[in-house]
Image 1 (cartoon, helix red, strand yellow):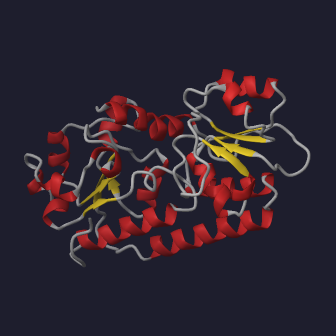
Image 2 (image 1 turned 90 degrees about the vertical axis):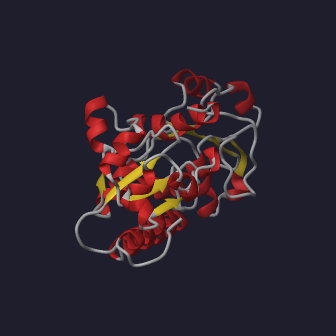
Length: 294
């Protein structure tokens, strides 16, 4: 695994492994926050979507969307309590994977900290949007955004082509780490009626983020391959086709290999519908209803 992906994979997988179904805990605080520091890329996207962008004074080094977010060198994985406090926040949004001693350190300084776990299901993501709207002082906007995201996701799921269940392989990195059914992404695939080829490896390895061998993927013969490692690792449908033996895979032969922006494929904010819609398009290609999906 590349050095860049060694860092990126925990950002996706570790947070999801540690996360729960919903909102997470936060210290009680009076009034609406005026200076928010977001150390969660998903929370950053939510804050700007609900109209709280003007309240955000700093975001972590992984929060690269939207472009106007005030990105800094702050990190939730190697947090510097003094640096975070230096932005004089009255609310800090922290992911569940952030070290507990750092969260305790922020609270010891009197800072209000909202811990935002990674949801296990779509319903948990919608709850987080609504809850963050309420905490940030935009409850109506939070409810509207959550409703809009849910409606668009459900429309995409309803539009998914029916028939014999297709098999999907979700690629987190070129070393063939994947996300099985007991994950946020995996449950989206289940909602779409897809069979996840990583499930046997997950059961064998005892982790919902197993590493598959190239031979195992070829033998599983997925109808659909979703690449979530294009930005980090340069993977494309063409490169997949050139892998030894992969040209025999049904997804490659039918043009049902789709590269989805790594961030869109790993975050649970307002861009979830884009991910679902891209997968549905690839499903249509897998069933012979369109051209290459990538």
